[in-house]
Image (tube, rainbow, N blue to C red; front, side, top):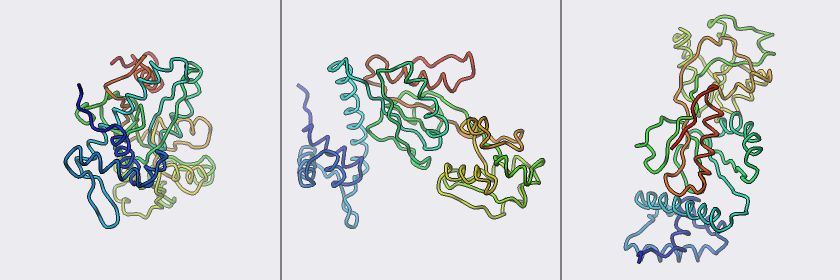
Length: 304
């Protein structure tokens, strides 16, 4: 027989690490904070070691506890997926996808209607993360992250190349009409809009444009790229944007590319899903669909 730790204690422990606090975990689990603390104590007794250390007024998971919580989260996800597939075959399937905010808003979500039309029994739930937060947490089935397709970076997941990305100069058609940019030097005098989550975009573009000497000029910086994009759409300045994420904005006339020949390659995106427990190839099939949406016409889909 398997010598398993108490499963309710594991569930409470994983929720505390994922949510970042005992109170939030208790709220999610529908129990009291005291009950969560008791479950953590039970698990620590079973393991024979502490799972949290005190930092000021907060209890913080130890590095080993975070590793254990990630394993537990994956196991709970696989258990839930298997139960849905085998225990309730007629029930609508839920597929949870995590993606960086800008990619979700400008690339993934506009395409989901096509997936839902072909898979009416599956409901895709999208959660977003800042591009500064690249870790994988429990509670999602497929994650899209910026990175390269190296399995050693995510050893517990299939890693599938998804999108290549390039940066180029973006501006609104209205601003171009008032003050056009026909050559790289024309950017001088415009307001430069930048994003904390995409540090280095302007420096890379200026180098590619042969304008390194302008790198010290001031920029208006926002915390997230989707805020910067909106400011560019509103004609408040010029920015550096990525393709293919902004192709929908260019096609709709919200944005234009004044110097499309100057492009800076960036690290692209990969799709990740657990190596175990994929009944009916739900996750692999969704990743195949993602790859098909991203690939040029005629490109082969991923087959794990």
